[in-house]
Image (cartoon, rainbow, N blue to C red; front, side, top):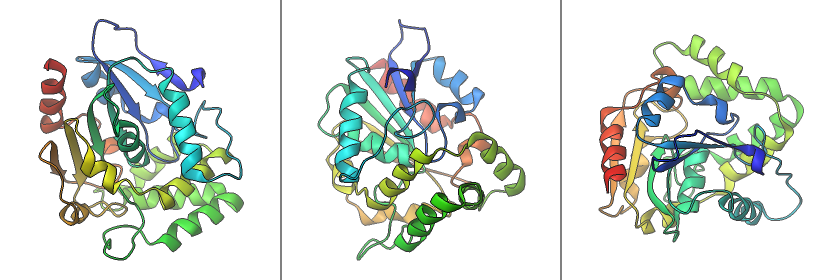
Length: 257
C-alpha cells in the first residue's frame, strides 16, 4: 500500500490528495495542473485499488466492503489533515472517504456522478448493461475495451482522435482494474454527498457522454456544495490541462481557512 502513494516534498503547505479516474493511475494528471496545484498544496497522488502501483487484490467478497477496507488501509498513510480532489470514479471514492471524516478539510470533484448507473428516478447516468459489457469485455479483450472507454470519455471533445490517443497512452492493462468497473456499477454516494459537511466544489462538463450534468437537479445539495459547469467531455482535464478560475478560487479559499 505504501508504494501506491506518491507525495511532493513541500511539507510546509496544506495537503491535497488526488484520486484519478478508472483505468488510469497517478501519472494521468497533466503537468500544468500539478504545477498550478503545487503553488498552494503539498500533493499526495494515490493509485486507486488495482491501478498503477496499488497492491490491492480483489477477492470474492462484497465489492463495497472491499473498497471500505482499502479506504481504511489507505487512510493510515495519509496526514492528519488534508483536502481531497477526485476525478470520475476517484470522485465517488473521495465522497465516500470524506463522509464523517473531520481529517478531510474540503472536497473537490471533477466529472463525477454520485451514482454512475441509471435506476428508477435516476435517469441521468449510464445504463447498467453498458458497464456489464465493459466488465466482460475487459476480461476478454482488455485493449479493445480500453479504447472503447477512451472513445466515450472523448465524446464531446473538439479534437476526439488525439485525445483518445493520449488517453490510451495513460491507460495500461491491469487485471485488477476489473474491480473498479464493479465499483462504477455498484457505488451509490448520493446520500453521502448530500451529508457532506466540508466545503465541496463540483465541476461538470456540459458535453460529458458518461456523466450527464443534469443529475445535479435531482438532488437537494447542501449549501456548502458549489457546482460549476465547463465546456468539454468527460476527459476535459486532459484536454485543457490547467485548472479553471472557479476551482482555483475554491481551493485558494479553503487553503486560507
